[in-house]
Amino acid sequence: GREFRATLGLLCVAGMLKDMKDVECKLVDCSASGNNYEKLRSEIEEFRPDLVALSALTFTLLDVLKSCQVSKEVDPEILTCVGGVHVNLYPKETLNFDEVDFIVHGEGEKAFKELVLALKSGDEEQIKSIQGVGSKHEKEVFLNPPGEIVKEMDSLPFPAYELLDLNKYSHVL
Image 1 (tube, one colour):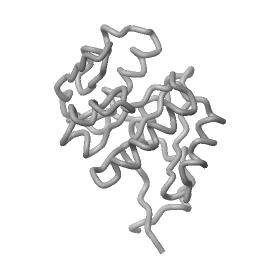
Image 2 (tube, rainbow, N blue to C red):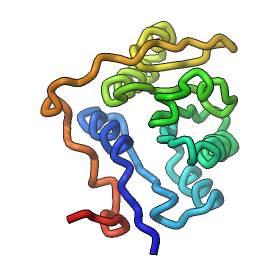
Image 3 (tube, rainbow, N blue to C red):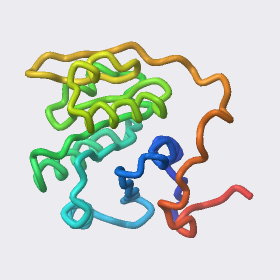
């Protein structure tokens, strides 16, 4: 059978949001769960998120874009944010896709949390200045350089593994 690995990047950014009492995270791993786009649509309709965050490798980009499209079909007001290795290589190109509202490149934990805080406060000007975030405002693209590398990994919270059924994943040990 096919092996699946937990999406560590998304688990890490979700871990950064744990201390925000008014933010609820849900992680949907379509590959490990065997979900198709219709099941994803149902998950989005049920949860009704304000923001959908996705992680893209270059070979998963088309699925990520389709997932963004499905999100916006459910509710055009849902915002989408894409991070991951593909975005680190092609930040501006990824942000130029119509389905993508924001990108996070470089180390995303702090940048994504700052983005969520700025979205909650409605401060568009703040969003335009967050290191590691790219955004679009009235067709104008804002792409900030990546933020500083986290030198002290212990300063970050643990990944939010509780959002996953770990039995669906392969383990090295």
